[in-house]
Length: 244
Image (cartoon, rainbow, N blue to C red; front, side, top):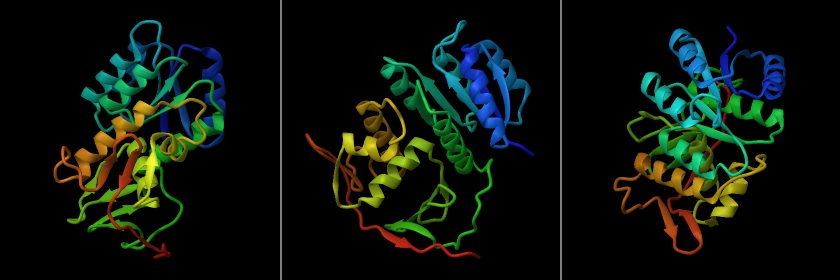
């Protein structure tokens, strides 16, 4: 069955372009042009696997739609579509639990890549390879499975990550013990995006600390280097992937 994507945007031209390119990649695309219609669709169509949500809609604010989605279906991935000058909406949306954001104007291929990444992480899109139980990146008993985009704690319990959190943790772990500025982290996590914001890194760091630190207020893994940026302070071991 094709993964169903709900596209919520009042710009008819954008909807046509995204519907065409996503259909080419074997997605079923359903379109709503208002926030209220989107909320109705989400309630009545449980098969929807992901929402592409514009932040500026003709009836209600996109953040309000996101809030309702988080209440009704907290596991439903949401990728925000944002225009110029909407930094505050992006930050609030990430804090509310949005998985990722894409700045307008965008390359449709970037949207497809982000959608696939989020759906792989959520399990709605099958991965193309099978890995061993020990593949990925390891630190302090934790494992980041880079094929399934999953994080497992030392008890082998899966820790849910949004696409933004996963991308940032991957960048930090691939550069363990190196101090990375916010600008460098933005390059590593949103290299294809046309507009990104420093504050999104701070929000995602805060969310990651809540999930992997023993005491998020006194972080031992992701440390702040005042005036410079952040550093992943644990040793990281990379295990080779192999087919089962």
